[in-house]
Amino acid sequence: MKILKAAIFDMDGTLVDTLADLQDSVNEMLAHYNLPPRTLDEVRRFVGNGAKKLMIRSLPADCNFLDEALKFYNESYARNCLKKVQPYDGIMDLLAALQSKKIPLGICTNKQHFAAVAITEKILAPIKFSYVSGDEPLSPRKPDPTRALAAAKKFSVAPEDVAYFGDTAVDMQTAKNAGFLAVGVTWGFRPRSELENSGAQIIVDHPREIFRQINFG
Image (cartoon, rainbow, N blue to C red; front, side, top):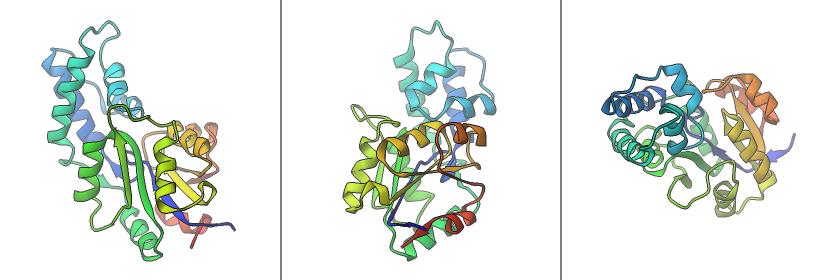
């Protein structure tokens, strides 16, 4: 079994369950415009490609106030992003085990950068991530591999020695585009079939399974 030297993670649906906070902010935005709320399952389907795409999917097709709605949503989510979010079962143990092996840890997400940093510092502490990259103006969004490859470069690790973990097709495409091992996780926002159809090389159903299938060292 090949020995891998670094681990990079998606955030929403992979490390932490953010869905309730995302839904609260989506519905706060919709209520502001006197629009009907979105269900948890709808929001689950809508996330993964950044906040602007979430707004496009949440608003009516003929919406002519997208930028204003996005600004309102971002302000709402800045207030809500730490209220209900929780790490998935087994994630903190996994991260602690990787950290004890001195495996460099990174996060590359399409979530707003401010929220990614806040969640990393408040919810995932005391784990130390050497690289955290979220969506910022002018930065490429996944599945563009630019930000993920920047993490590998910072770690001084070749792409083929990196495992990238995610719960969506976008994540598997990002891993493939970067030359990483694409590891799909089934506890997140998308079904196993999406991971299978988008090129996942390994699929795990719980964090405890990861060390059975991947050799870090």
